[in-house]
Image (cartoon, helix red, strand yellow):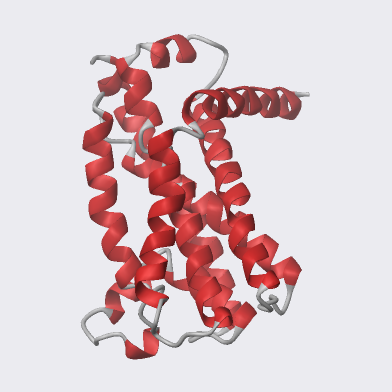
Length: 248
């Protein structure tokens, strides 16, 4: 019974986020159009085949869509004074965060479909569709949690959080084997790549299409660990900053 109530409350918050925040112009721009043109800029005219390009497009789409809204929901709701109203309901901070991450994860799942379908139409089929679906779900959840970490900044100005998020997110694209293969990465960048949450799911997707750098099982295991860490950190940070946020 308690699980059903929790799921219903999470879905209520998720549905609210979808109606209010998703499919807005800036979200579609940063979550869909930006990674597409960034991918085209790096892969067009470089002689890469479809199988080599689809994994990078897929991971970038997941990265930007799944982490595009969660950073701005808490500061925006703080400014609109709707966060106080939400927390007066029979919900916990964990429930609110779960609802926000559920909406963000769903957003990532939806927009991961076009890269996969485009690849299949061009002859690039994943070696194991079940593994692909599972990693897409896991990765989208992890990137949603990363967005929640950024939003723990106790501010009511969404631009402050977006600036912080982009300052971290954009460099990660270039040092995680997404656009530059890990075997061609400069030595100074490898330590960063080894702790980047993009590196291992990106490498896993490459294994599903043409071949990766690390062991496939290692990619999956570290991705699971990183997702759990990101979720735990997000909850702990929001519990610390929620009262500072409510005072604004």
